[in-house]
Amino acid sequence: MTTAPVDVTYEEILYEVSDPIATITLNRPDRLNALTGRLLSELRHAIAAAEADERVVAMVITGAGRGFCAGADMQRLKNTADGSGHAFAEELESSPGDPEMGEDFQVTYGYLLAVRKPIIAAINGPCAGLGFSIAMLCDLRFVSENATFTTAFANRGLIAEHGLSWILPRLIGPSRALDLLWTGRKFDAQEADHLGIVNFLVPHDELLERAQDYVRTLAERSAPNSLRIMKQQVYKHLMTSLGPALSETNTLMAESLERDDFKEGVNSFLEKRAPQFARVGLPGDM
Image 1 (cartoon, rainbow, N blue to C red):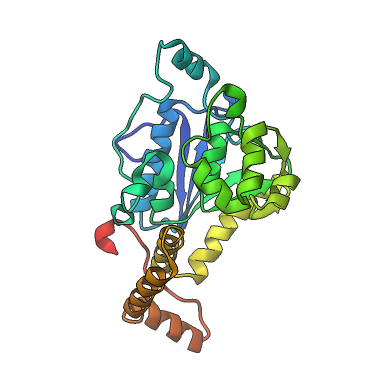
Image 2 (image 1 turned 90 degrees about the vertical axis):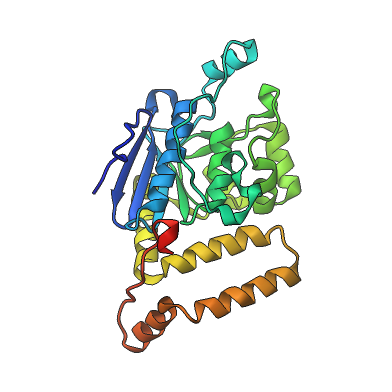
């Protein structure tokens, strides 16, 4: 087990690796984990650390205390509105995400879609504003039955921030997305499940364990390099027409047939044993 990378002391998140899981906890519980520049920078840094760590098959992001994330810290937003500060000014050096995904996936929080490993949100309570955007940009969402959601942007005189206008219609359709964006109304976990935002709706006390068990299952059954390539296929092909998507897939399939993972997958099936796939770490190890 490991904590934060040696060159950084995290102040507003908790970071823990227990093979095969990196758990990242937003840790401002007295503020419902409202986002600051420091927290966002630490989150990005921790994701880069987990992406580079061979022990990590996937990441789980959750919130400390009773909430997932209340969105941007309102006092920081007030300072921004008054012209006396910037809400998100702090930066730690980090570069998560595969640059081969292209520049589209390097704009603000688009990097979450380019990270080479699955990112799972374990939403344990209120999830609002920018916190909602980040949750939607995660690959899967495990949601507590106690969770609540709101976009809130229109109610603050803002617009659909940081990729939400791109990802939300793709998850639930344009008209449903517009309803949630226009009204900023609060909705519960059951409605979120009905809308299609939720992948797994679970009892509150089982939330983190269920999300982590999902990662353990991936580590036992699935090749990490396959997970990486499939994630790239899905997000890149959302913006690609059918012919080029099929052509790229054919190339990727031919390459996968030459990898040791394919041989191990076939042999483990025939030998009726669990596969032993290579892990994914730094780009040079892939």
